[in-house]
Structures are given as C-alpha cells and as structure tokens.
Length: 250
Ligand code: PEP
Image (cartoon, protein in one colour):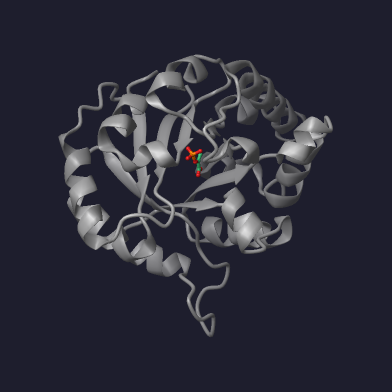
C-alpha cells in the first residue's frame, strides 16, 4: 500500500513565538486516520523547537531546503548533517519557489537528491509546469524532463526514500487549483513515466502528492483520485484547523 501523506510547507512564515502557537494548536487537532502521515516544515530557525514540541505527537518535521555540500564556506546555507543532528530526517527539494527565485535547476537538484540519499534522508521532490507550458500543451514534456533530469538517476532501492510532489506553478499560492481530473491525469502520467524506467513495483509504490491551493473545501475531491496520495499544502498549512481538516479529507 502506498503511503498517504499531508505535508505543510510553511515557507518563510512564522517567527519563533508564532511557531510556538501554531505547534501547540496542531497538537490539539484530531488527526483521524492513523494511516495518514502528517508533516510540517517550519523555517530552519524553528526546526529544533518543532522537533521537541512534536516529539510525542503523530506529526513529523521536515525542512524546506538543504545545501548539496557537506560543510564549508557556503555562507547562509544549511547541511544535511545539521538537519539530521536537529532530528529532521526529511527534506523538501525542488520547490518551484527555489527553482524560480534561487536559480535551482535540475542539475543542482540532482546533486541535492544525492546528498539527501547519502545521508539517509527522506526526500519530498517537487516539480511542475508553469502556466505557459500548460497553455502551450507542453506540461507533460516539462514534467517528464524535470523528473528525468532531477531525480531519475537514482536506483530502484532509493525510491523507498522518495516522495514526489506535483505542483503546477500556476496553482501555487494563486487560489487556482488544478481540477481533480487535471491532477489525476498528470499523476497517472508520472506513474507511467516511472514504470517505463523503474518498473511496475516501483511505480505502484511511490507516493505522489498534489500541491497547489489545496484547502479543506477541495481536498477530498483531489485526494479521492486513484493516483493522488496526498498533498503538499502551503497557505492552508498555516492554520491548524484548516491543515488538520485537509489531513482528515481522505
Ligand atoms: C506550496 O507552496 O507548496 C503550495 C502548494 O502552496 P499553496 O497551497 O499556498 O498553493
């Protein structure tokens, strides 16, 4: 059975005091389905607090990014070892905001993927087309290329540590969601692409999350699609009630 996952991407939101409030609020929520994995990703400065606060809860903590090098003169960056030593075992890589605003391309992401795997970390690997790609009918081509150039160099064994997150850029933070049919169509394509290279078993066991303006009002319809295994949630993850409602939408 594939893992069902709801992960909240807090982005650059919530200072230490606000994080304390949101974490306490999250702890009070009822997450009804034991089988749904719940993850939050506060900014780097608040990861340690999140790990400590959520220690006895069902919520796991992940990071939003990581540097590809082990250590050294990379001012402002955070390594895999630093994350792991803080108790963080999972990292989001390739978020469209990292690609668009920080110049992260497929080659760099491939290096980050290798670093995460070398450090026995779990990866949530994000990708997705821009609006012009979709309008020009190039969305499948773009997604295939992001996958092939960013993560398809891994081996069969590595897939156990990888979760994919399809996030059409035009749906992120815009209030515009891909329709459940559009999400299903792309997720089925992603699974087919994995099957062609890595075989049926790997394709059937990789969890593929959808991200892009998921809210309590639209989550159940999207999560009901057979190839959608959960969501990466931005804005709605900043409210504990909304986030738990989404996690309870399967
Ligand atoms: C995201 O940032 O990964 C995201 C999906 O954001 P939002 O839910 O706000 O569209």
